[in-house]
Image (cartoon, rainbow, N blue to C red; front, side, top):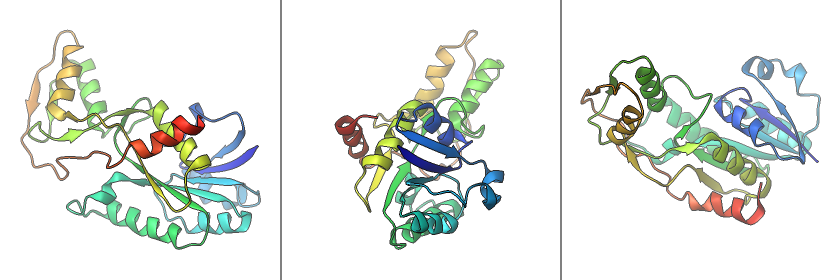
Length: 229
């Protein structure tokens, strides 16, 4: 039985980790408030840790060292995009380096684009579906050519557990679908499934990352195929 500590446990990633949790796992899912209250989790011993919270991994590294636990750090595909040099990207890159240099047994998952319950309201697919449901136009902030791929949260959860339990130490795994779809195609699919069919409005603004796709999505999928959930 694996005793697993999960930060960011009540967000989108935590929701789907819980939905796909293997039977051999006993997991503690921390909310942001619970993470800040160290008395709730620092006194326990863990065999595995997943750091999904968008916060420094310093405390988690300490815990992993104390317990000699494997650490899965949840990063982002944004690390591949220096043209979008925002604070979020700089933090993810710095924290990847920090966990890799820590001396603990570390694997990294770089997440891309997903769909399913629990997504933030600022995600395009959520905004499109909400607008369609309310009978409002579907607004595309770019010119419609921006490319993404969409993986269902359930598949993401399965892949993350596989990387945690079976990934090679020190390696990074892209978590995302390989099928590209433009924003215009996505909006068109959602509009076509709605009656009455909503209008699609293209704003024409510049997109910071016109293409955002996994570099090697097959690497994580091979783990899952080999070891199962």
